[in-house]
Amino acid sequence: MHTDIHTEVLWENHVFASDDFSSVKIGERIFEDCTFAECNFSMANFRQTSFVHCNFSQCKFANTLLNDCKLSDVVFRDCSVVGMDFSKCKKLLFSMSFDRCHVQVGNFSSLNLSGTSFGKSRLIDCDFYDTDLRKVDFSHCDLAGTQFENCNLHEADFRHAESYQIDPAKNKLKNARFSIPEVLSFLAPLHIIID
Image 1 (cartoon, rainbow, N blue to C red):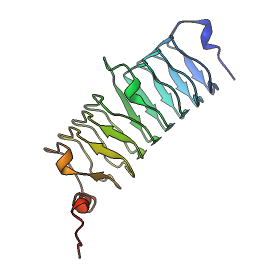
Image 2 (cartoon, rainbow, N blue to C red):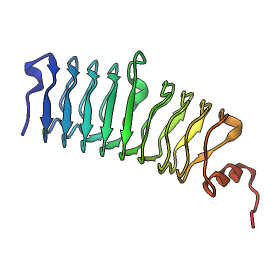
Image 3 (cartoon, one colour):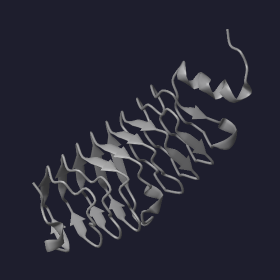
Image 4 (tube, rainbow, N blue to C red):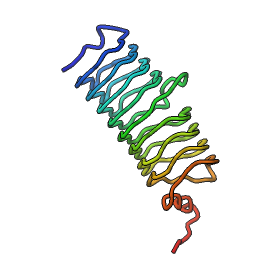
């Protein structure tokens, strides 16, 4: 099944189900209050596209281009998101959340993600450099290989998260929440032996 998204510039309250948009240029379109279920966006180009109050459920993204894309109140649920550079999105009114997603090799640098939820997602080999992560929910997340540097993690929630490596000397951690034993990873940069 394939909806021709080029027939309209503005899509409102539309449900896209099982559409294959792989390698399609979706640019310069506006989607408001739309739902995308089980769609494939691999290698798609979202250049200058706006998604406002949209939900993506069980969708596949791989190397999808986001240059000048607007994401405002966008929810990704049970999605596979690989090789996406969110730092290329428009910064104004940028907001999104993830629920039980697999996110790999994602770039979230220089974004304001304050209050964002990554609920129970796997964030593998992702980059957070100079990112505002105040009050972000990373609880129950797998953060293997993910880098945090020069981030504001005030009041962020890492309880029951695993595989994270955070250098306290390179990030702001005031009132951030962690669980034992994972919080012992803070000692890794010290190269000490714990018995």
